[in-house]
Image 1 (cartoon, rainbow, N blue to C red):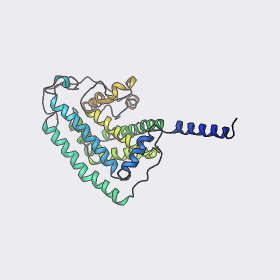
Image 2: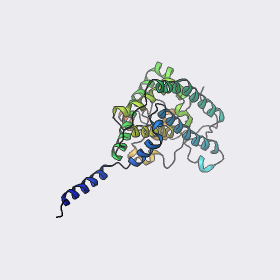
Image 3: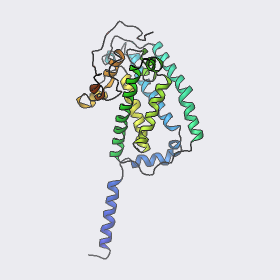
Image 4: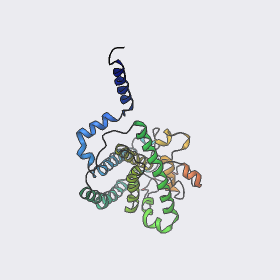
Length: 287
């Protein structure tokens, strides 16, 4: 063996070990830190990220809603093919969403930005396993929290009338109904979405991904469409609730309380999956 051969082998082994433990997300994380570190560290970043994601999704679904009456290729996927989303529906839901964000969300975000120093960013990205398990873990925890909150706000009349009845003014859902909420409900959802990754000690990249995933599936639950690529069709064994079950909740408010998974409603005896009810074409907002 040549002098230093053993040392060379050790160096090669260490290099291999380092490469095997480097996250596949590290190049993305390095790019984000090198080019957008100041934005990522700002307390305003999660708010801007979540609002942007929501606006992109509702814009997409709203365009489909407006095209559906004249495009059979879109209308065939609507849960209620006889209902039409009107400009009045769009205006009223968008107005409340704007009001809530201007009056509550953005002032709170700005206050946090003024009072809280920029957060330090970890140098290392999460491993792919930790990233995916973190999103799943946060989703499971959030699902249980909101199931209890939702069940309580339906079973206690004062809570329902004061905080949750607003969301149920629409019996047949469309995307903008997702955040047609009272300030208390919007705060509750935002609080758990923010705190759950902290409780599970997730990397900030995982926390942001969970936030986007939460907004995506929440909007999909309310979109009013049953697409082949919907989450409830991708997750096997009927474990995911999805748009059909949440639409059923808006028709039968004593059922399907869990926001994402179906197991809590199975265990609680509140699961249902009725066929869509077709009604005459009208503005589906109840007084």
